[in-house]
Amino acid sequence: MSYPAPMSDEKLIRFYLNGNPAAMATLVELYKDRVYSTVYGMVHDRYAAEDIFRDVFIRIINNLLSGKMAEEGNFLQWANAIAQELCMEHIRISKLAIVIDNCTETGSAATNTHASAAALPGAFYHESHGRIKSMIDLLPDEQREVMVLNHYAGRSFREITEIMKCSLTSALDTMGCGLHNLRRMMMEREMVLS
Image (cartoon, rainbow, N blue to C red; front, side, top):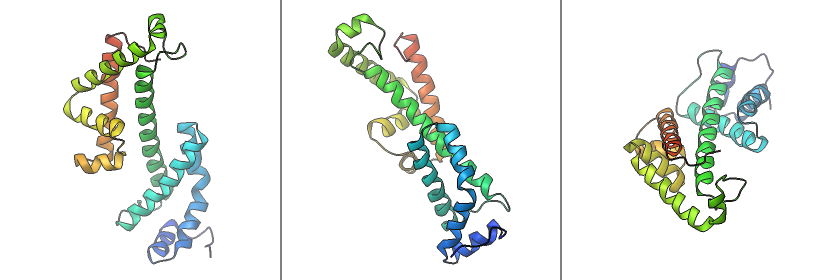
């Protein structure tokens, strides 16, 4: 069962919260193209966009079930704000992976422009891996903790917020600052980040 398009978002949300899942299906149908466009426009990757798009509506459902609502008439804005937040999380994680991968690669010419490193891949791997870990150790406590939890312990940002008792925005900002500081330290030490 679906509902006619003229029904307001607020009524559809009320129907959903009163136990009718078709109301959420109608909301998804109404806004899926615009939300997906927002996501794809930020990440430019079809597979990532599909995962993030799904997570947007999971987050909306979790928020609704915990009593958090969009402001009246702003369901699309709310969905797009959540989409942007999840996209930023994806982008920040991707940037960290690029930084770590570029600095711990085994020295192929495609990822490392130092000829001597290409000639000694094993030595370069251990040296750069050790240097990266030592630079992460120099980060402020919160930045180091977020980076270690996310990259080395494989924790999601949702788990990190619970461990560190902070908001998702705060965890993402801390990661962003940590990445910026790590990149700056690497550049000062002339490590390749391309």
